Length: 148
Ligand SMILES: [Fe+2]
Ligand SMILES: [Fe+2]
Image (tube, rainbow, N blue to C red):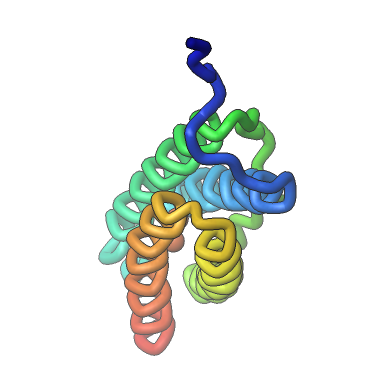
């Protein structure tokens, strides 16, 4: 009897590439939000400083989770973030971050759809959970933007 050492779930190269895009984005925003936390200034900025740190840490955890999944599926997680855009003012931070969250939401819906099509229900499940966080981040950033 031969036992296969391959992962029990196999996914397409297209889905692997999307998972790497997701990792690149998560690395991007974890640095982007953390540096906004570091560089923030002004009275209004100081009041919301910790929000950027909190969300940045959540994004790093997303990167880890997705990288673990991709590694399990036989892929190699990228170490390169998508372009990081920190911005110069609280208003600009929040505009950039809202945009980043919208892009994440669009990408993760696409991943859930493709993973489901390929019967990779665990990846779909992981991304449903992450999607919920991204929707919360989007809600937080747009609420903050209304109050700048
Ligand atoms: Fe994320
Ligand atoms: Fe997010």
